[in-house]
Length: 462
Image 1 (cartoon, rainbow, N blue to C red):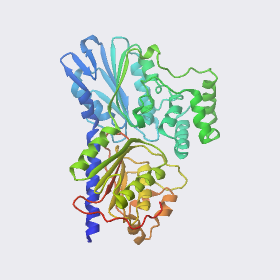
Image 2 (image 1 turned 60 degrees about the vertical axis):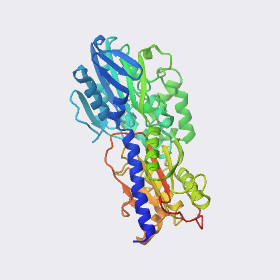
Image 3 (image 1 turned 90 degrees about the vertical axis):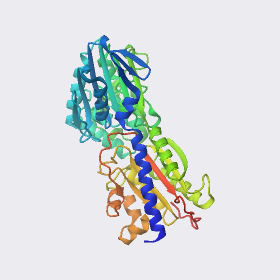
Image 4 (image 1 turned 45 degrees about the horizontal axis):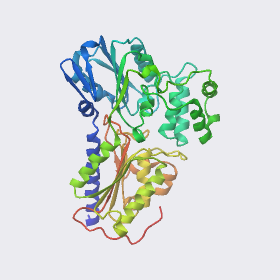
């Protein structure tokens, strides 16, 4: 094995350590315990001080890929003070809870189990009164895991809407704008159903900017969007005709004022509702940065709020890596470039993959043979698209190694088939469920500590 190969292997291991240190920082049970503590009959949540003896019942509800360990943490804090609880989680994303029922359901495509669990949640909190406390645990994936559409819309309609929005590259903000206006539980409707109980939501954010009304489509948050915004999304992507006719009819009825808008800021149903973010992408990025520095890398944090088309975002990261190799700017090697957020993929091919695998494949092409560079792009939840991978590694030798196996990287990228490109190379990152979710984390390493990175001689086009 050449020295270059050894350097790449070490950098890949460093990238793995940096990524997992970021994930570790947003472990949801620990996050809940950082914000919540009990002292006899007092429960402190953030800046809230609650007298537990003042409540007749304490109900726990919620949904998301991180919600099971959040529920376990609440059980450890509150014990038998919890009267009843129902939380929807993704299949396999469970925890050994005792007093809270976990309903495993489909994600990213909603299924009947999700509908059943959502109905049970709504039934439970609808009977709450002013002497009850409702603790709501919300995390990424909550939108798909709380599928309770209005009566005129079916589950299959919701599944088709999700497919259309995903294929056209709609952002999570745009997807959730529509979800909130077709749901009996999202867009503030959960808080409305629980009124006049005290409602406190603990959230692990998986959305760019940590917008409260976007996380899991804001079930306990005033909705800032309208039916008019729904039609802006449909017309922006030209997909109105692609949606089921009954869905469009429902939205048109809302636009005409025949169906009430979602609850807005100032509505009395939010008078006793508080929402608190306990985990977010920037916490993962900062922890990853600290680990990179410990390993000897100079660090550059781009942003925890990066959006946009995946290949374009990959091109920007590649350009910075090449600049570091060529000129030593904006930082010198050995360098670690970090970013978070959530990109989108415009699907034109018939392959299999996810936005993180597609990012890594585009980066592999943009960094082919440039020098000692390693990229790891992965979802903090351990899932990337409809695959068993969290993401994938790429390095400056990925394209040439694939070529030796008879694989053309460009063809796989054009077919959105990054998964089948990376699988034979052994470059997929497979973590299994991490039980957290704060969007994606991207790690780009340029040069190995203790080594001098050779200047790049050529800059192949991306």
